[in-house]
Length: 193
Image 1 (cartoon, rainbow, N blue to C red):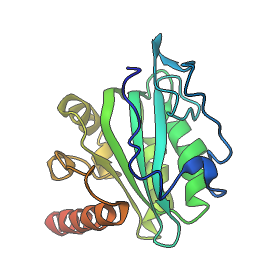
Image 2 (tube, rainbow, N blue to C red):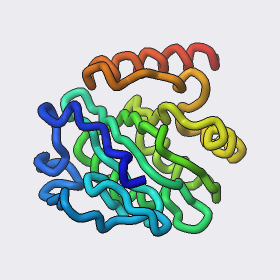
Image 3 (spheres, one colour):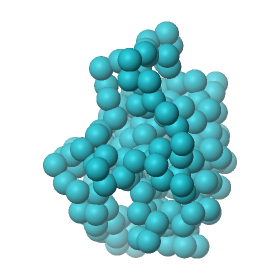
């Protein structure tokens, strides 16, 4: 797991540790020493701890004028034991929503497992965003993770599923990714009605 680095091609455009509006502002990273672990497996030092022992994040890009953020996740999303959604909501999303972020793209290809509990934090996050026209998209979920999430109906609150999987986002700029995902969200909402 220590070889899985957060995506770094947009670092010239955005760095959360240098963004005064970011919950990770002022963080320092030791590139020579691995100290963070998930289940005794060391992870790359660029991943950010936000309270969960099994799920780490990296804010790849935030645009406060447009109101969106692209965040990459790594690890096991475990609501049953660690209540990871609470940490993600309270420590990351609440801070960013307070700064005007209402649309979240969570890149989940490195989320290796999901363990469900109840959906109250998902519902709360949805309620916080829906009045602002906001949304949360879970991008590139592994099939078994998506299936587990759908069993407790997270898709009532977040956008996930086939429409948002197998998206090759890495070659593109953040603004282009946002436009494409926003288009998919609008397309997906039209299918529902």
